[in-house]
Amino acid sequence: MELSDKKGVQHIVMALAALGLKEVVICPGSRNAPLVISFNRHSAFKCTSIRDERSAAFFALGKAIELKQPVAILCTSGSAALNFAPAIAEAYYQRIPLIVLTADRPKVWTGQGDGQTINQTDIYRNYIRKSFEINGDATSENDLWYLNRCLSEGFNIATYSDKGPVHFNIPVSEPLYGTTAADENKLQKVFREITAEKHIPENEMELLAKQFSECKKVMLLVGQHLPDESLQTVTEQLTSFENVVVLTESTSNIHHSGFIENIDRCITHLNDKEAKAFMPDLLITAGGAVVSKRIKKLLRDASPKYHWNVHPYDSAMDTYQALTSAIALEPNIFFKQLLPYIQPTTSDYSLRWNKLKNEKEHAHKQFCADVAYSDFKVFETVYKTIPSSTHLHLANSSVVRYAQLFDNSKTASTWSNRGTSGIDGSNSTAVGAAAASPDKNFVLITGDVTFHYDKNAFWTETPVENLKVIIINNGGGGIFRIIPGPDKIAERERFIETSMATNAGHLAAHYGWNYLVVKNEQQLEPLLKEFFAPSTTKTILEIFTDANQNPLVLEQYWKFLREKK
Image (cartoon, rainbow, N blue to C red):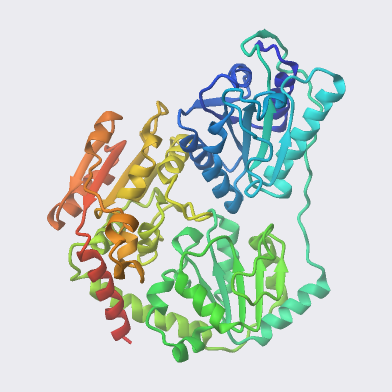
């Protein structure tokens, strides 16, 4: 096997193979050529070429999410490394393991006017679990040992001890294209971290159980979480307690008839006095980001007596300004340990929430039966017709918010980039996920601005026949017409909403995608059924709605729910 003739590069690649890395997303360039040659020729790696660094990093993020394993991204020196930053920030806040590899010029040339040379040391310092500087030109035994030690430490951080992105900056000198015979099976001295399941001491568990049982109102709020059957099971068990209510969102990926799955639908009408009856004495939070701004405000205002945050890495996060117990465990493990200790408590709390849920569900169905053509109508129809096998990706802004109003239990899973909640990588993340699992059916729902912002996601030869995209084209950033504030200022349309008149038809043709278009309600359901048909592959469905009508319909919806008390 011919690898780069640089010993340091050989050790980097073979150490990562020994550590278990399998996927590498490679961006073009020259300074990274020794690494490109070696990764591509080593049998342990599947290498994917993506031209645009920002898109490539989100593509890798989508793969890592779907495969539940680390994925490496590799680029050349200079500004290429900066373009990885948005996806690295998303991975940082979502705890997704990315192995970030940036080739660099020799450090003696930093700041000396040499081409394509910037200071890459610690370049992602605010959004990285750890950064390492490792020498691709290393030759001595000590230097090569140091490479293996750093790579082992970083890989273990990324995947176990402080999960998330880790950066290796790799200076290499010219010549860059030389190769030599190498034994890819040569044993590398790397180390893997061995972790043990944590167990809360009995005295601590008894104290928590006492708090649980003394509270008549216990709320479990589950934020963003990957599908987890074990978590599903233990949360279902918690619903058998009269004093417990479980609140979830589409991105929580757990569903049950006893859960409150459409939070804003239930609480939008509550005044301060009414809200008090629904707020908990004990708040338990698990998972990542919560979409609902309303529930966050209500809980902050309520200041529960107790708040337990259950998270293996971020248990000290005090989102609701009421934290009393930071529990550093996976939620499913914690609840398994807790359940034997807690006793039933007589309460009408669960009954009260479920009565509210049923009332609002009835009102929701009444409203949907006669709703005008709009973004709201589009989402209602999408969720009515979407196949149950669908792995759904939701773009940010209005898309992820509308999705919380409808029944999400049909889909196999739901993902959204809620770590940073940006619009910059939704397409690429979905393309990466679909490429990682060609046997699954993926659908991305996005807006027109978000779609065009990341259109380089489709500039790839990677086959994604199993991905379909719905664009809701409301002529700009529709979110700024449905949140309070922007709708009151003259600059909204041009500078904030960035109103535009575009369609994706030419882009679809350019990249070889099928294209369907909906312009009215009569076309909506028939074309959605055609779009969702198993025989339809690699298709963009663009649905046009009226930017002025959309906020009116949504306001009518909230008003209807308020009046149906």
